[in-house]
Image (cartoon, rainbow, N blue to C red; front, top):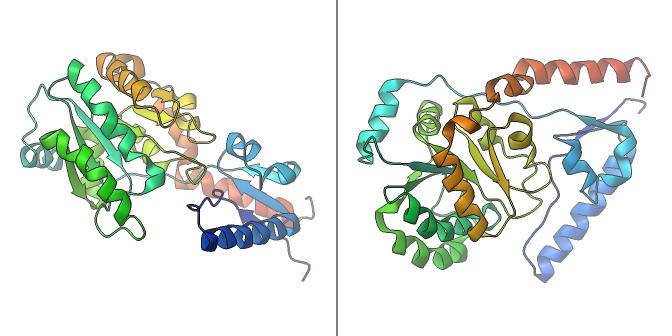
Length: 278
């Protein structure tokens, strides 16, 4: 119809192995290929992810890198105190946070498997897990497999469920470090780590395309190979031991992810396309 089209491509689809999922993947990939080739511009979160994505490698000349917008609610000290009281967190305790729905690709088991090593260095450490963990569609078997590992940790692991925006900001502030142990390409950026940085809390994230960029660019944490609790544990221990080293310039870097900055980037792209400059 003669109108320019902008596609925002978030991540590649990677479903568990089965005949039905194989067909779904094929259909999705075909639709993506047609759409991406017909679009005048393709927006993605990072060039790092695009250069490692089979779908995006063929459209790099019309790629536009615009990060997703990130914002957190104002931190209320009273809410932080309420969380401390609710989970009996003492001043010397070390709090490790994870924020995600409990799904296979998020890698919660890697953090759970790393915890015994972390506890050897920080016996009072505990994990607070934010996000849906019950009745997650398609993940019942995953929770069953994970349960023995979590039971062995006892009160060193607690599920907080889904939090309101103000409580989520308090959660990030309460944590000494947050962990994003994602496993595959369905994670292309990891907004939760940016939210953590906005609250001043460093991150340990998987060394995956796109996912590694917030930590790498801000200096607020470490990246580790995915699926390896033996490497995740020492990274967590290091961040806990040297918090001043990972204070970084998180807030300054995160300014480019403000809703206003992201909107301006899209507006510049739209104006350019409407003027006929593809």
